[in-house]
Amino acid sequence: MRPVPSRRRYWFPKHYSDAVQRLRVPMGFAMAAAFIWLAGPSARSLQLAAPLIVAGLGIRAWAAGYLAKNRELATGGPYRHVRNPLYLGTLLAAAGFALAGRQPLLIPVFALVFLLVYVPAIELEEQKLRELFADFDDYVDAVPMILPRGPKIDSTDRFDLRLYRKNEEYNALLGALVAGAYLVWKAGLLR
Image 1 (cartoon, one colour):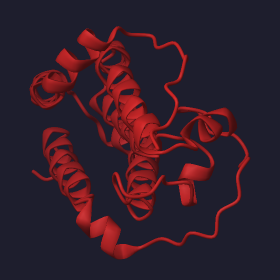
Image 2 (cartoon, helix red, strand yellow):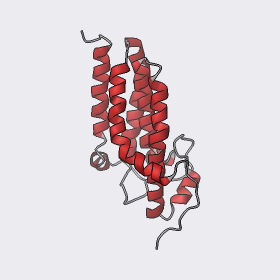
Image 3 (cartoon, one colour):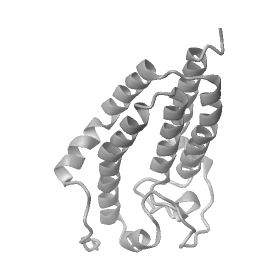
Image 4 (cartoon, helix red, strand yellow):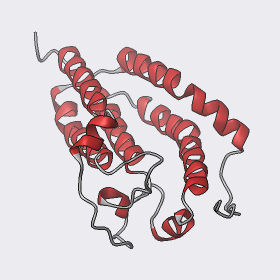
């Protein structure tokens, strides 16, 4: 039995979201290039940014251990607090890197990319989840999209390291380590 289509409204039209979904990876490379070019880190900015970056990566890692893509609706761990913890983690890590880069232009650019690229991606993913899982609308009613609040659902699910590996979340950590090493070098802390 197919779930009943939702009458929920989305911020972006589907054709825009589809186009942006294909641009997500190239946009990521463009953002990385802008970051490398504009960043002017200091020891202090790295120190202030590190907790945000670590928190973002931690949330992403935590979420990956609960995500069995397209097989089960993830409602355990961080998914009890927010429907999109991977994107929340990305947002925190990106804010941390923008802060580390000490370039005021990076913050609105990262925010704009998140709004115009990641929010439509979230909407597309949620449309797919709505088609896959009959109880998705109940989950949406109970759990916010991106800004967490106290858990409204119960779950006995446990973190699964196999899911973390299957979802290849270690790539985010490796990318952050490379970016962090670059910032440390650019700040002159390794010379």
